[in-house]
Image (cartoon, rainbow, N blue to C red; front, top):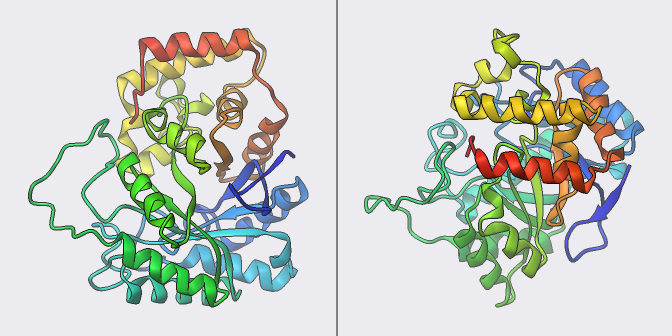
Length: 345
């Protein structure tokens, strides 16, 4: 395994992070335990979850992922070995069942964290993240920002950071991050940190061969302001494994189970995937490991969040950390990207 640190800290994290959103839906508790056991055995010390999980979000299963992880911590005593990240849900149609009038005000953030700590059977989290912007921005499938004059959002960054500061001082949180944010939001959080409020040290956004919009704005901010990307969906919900080539194996696929991820089913995504598959074949490696290694090598990356539904997938995904892509191969990837840029924003 390779390791880095959360930006600006001495907190050592594996460059592969175990994503857990399948625990409690696509994976049973026992299967979740097996995944966490294997990940730790392979040197993965960074686990990511959220109060929203598992997905797709619904009232019956909400919080089940954290409960499964808490049960694993209780059974194994491994809490001290793990850098644990979780998230507070922001407003949206998929989160309305979690709390009334959901937002990032003091009451909601405090309640969200306390409930997560109970489910996780721990008294602190290493990284606490705000899961989605409160304002109408950064939607799946939308490449740019389209202003909605009817957006009722009132800027709430300061209250959120003041609340997180109190929770840090109370020992419940070590560091903070954000998720699914746009460059303007990231900069607002960073500007406020210069006034004595906690600094956002990570941003968790989608990033893969099919989704590189992070490079437009956010990547420069990360490199210049010392913020690290936690990349999620690095395999495009399985599209970049190549297993769906020719329309095969889609009946129970994540791409079918999660219709909001239809962007990975677009003609452009399928065509780009086919070209990337041929590059991997020509270089004698699997598309899965090529796609993950591409993410692993980015200079703005802190950790690559991988997820799996079985141990064979998990082992291959973790193994990508040992692969280094050559300059020649990277040039071939860029040639495809220049012809089919960001087919799945």
